Image (cartoon, rainbow, N blue to C red; front, side, top):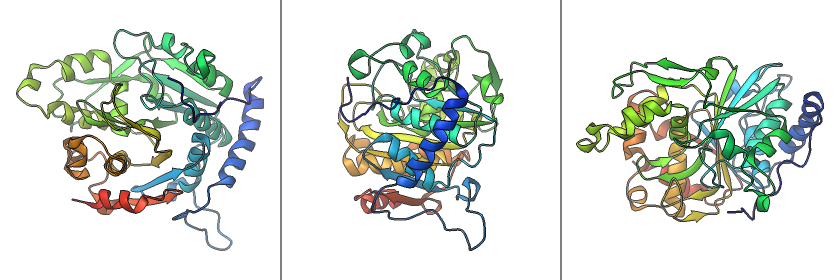
Length: 365
């Protein structure tokens, strides 16, 4: 289960939060300035005498795709191409939602490297607390598998990485949940229960992994948020409803509709290794795509993720159907979750030699 391409992302232990924030500021600045050769595009330049543009200046449909030697370098450079985490103000709290619902290594979960670099970058931007919150799939205790040492030959757990990075780990098993009922969630017959912590932080960053899914077809930024829907709702309304027997697209629509309950400010997708068949868990095929995909808009990010899968080779029902014809994506557009089609997506890439093919797959309708 070890990932031979991953280096240890937690080599700078922090004796206390203040020392860590100071160190992270230096790490973030140096990483963002390092970059990769061969940029296909760049962040917009500021006018003479004007301040550099911040995150708020980034168009909603911009999707950044970066390939680098390490996940950490890809995340840092990708954030720079998104004009940085300037939405974070001093002393604010930031919540990160990984794809980590069971004890599996990448590509079936978000990697420690991506999470730790995001934690570092958030502290460098001025955050007072960076919280990594997750809820295990039914039957598992979240804390138990976060503490399971299955990285680095059994030497480290995900919690070890997060502790060294100065993050706060929050298992949602016993945390309070609240009910919401978005008007567009028309296939939900009762309120959707989501974690209360979402209303108690200043910013929410979604950190999915790129992989296929046996029900949803794909699981990326939108499907990742299903982990923040209470198990009672997931099992009672979505997965085990008798309505699914006569309406095979119902669950795909519900995955899209539940996104109306969430408002992540940014999506950072770990596509360093991608599961191209058999997802969301083994067995199946994986590809060393060595990318990180970033964007404000979940529909745009997932559309680019689908284009990547169609480029490297995937399931027949992904390869043979244009991105925008996928039921999950089309329903999200219908309900106003994100952009309305390929004309609203702008690709910015660095180090990705096959970006023209990815863009062609993205534009096909």
